[in-house]
Image (cartoon, rainbow, N blue to C red; front, side):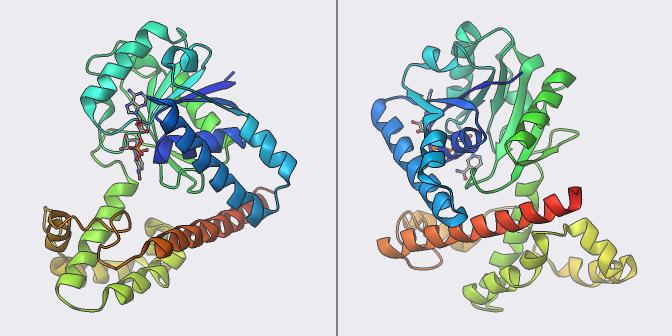
Length: 317
Ligand SMILES: NC(=O)c1ccc[n+]([C@@H]2O[C@H](COP(=O)([O-])OP(=O)(O)OC[C@H]3O[C@@H](n4cnc5c(N)ncnc54)[C@H](O)[C@@H]3O)[C@@H](O)[C@H]2O)c1
């Protein structure tokens, strides 16, 4: 049975994944390279949990008990020695991941499951130099990991079926919605779908078909509204497959087919304009606006999450 969780890397994803386990009662140990980074993670989790507490009416005692489930250490061995399930959430640099796996092989429990939160590496590449393939898996959480339900699960051809089953069960127990990929594919599923849509959004912006704000509204008030509850395949059934056959035949030949990043993104990156983190991207932001926007985004996600949970509970009654 999985009791102790170790999270390696306390950045954007590691912190929020740790929080997801801690609020479900698991004992979590977070590891990073130094105490300063761990303190940043502690602050981030405290703020995230405080917002949730405010939005869902969690009392102070519950909040403190959730926080008490998380331990912080800069000592890797200390973090993993008792762990039943280890999630690696260090940066997307293959050599760093290989180096970490090599260390883990020497210090983790012989039956610990190792999961990577990689967003781009195939599991076969992650495992090129490691010998624990039968207990390796990808658990790909989405940012913000403590709020977005989806977790994509990818197995190695040698991953044991029991490891897959335990992982799916664990991810469900923390209230997330896991999906299992039947085979390896670059970008997994959600990022492929998202990138296909964003390629077209940036094409429409380049062609000056509408303003950036209106293109965004076309999604948030249109397909995005539906997508929280009905996926694209079901939407085809609801709309009528004969209708969708015509939509594909009339629209697909006109869609953007480019294989490189949109020109506007490449130009802005070259100028150091990276979006909210630099104060300017497609839109302009001052520091105040960035924290306001993030707060607003998280509050909306919490409300949507609550609503989805209620719908799920009704369906399972
Ligand atoms: N940010 C996202 O939106 C997102 C979404 C899904 C998946 N991912 C994936 O999750 C992983 C982590 O991404 P992130 O955005 O959280 O990165 P991040 O840069 O915010 O955090 C990474 C953390 O790992 C720490 N670290 C580096 N080497 C380490 C080591 N050897 N041992 C312990 N800690 C170490 C760093 O100090 C840093 O705090 C990556 O594989 C990324 O591709 C990111």
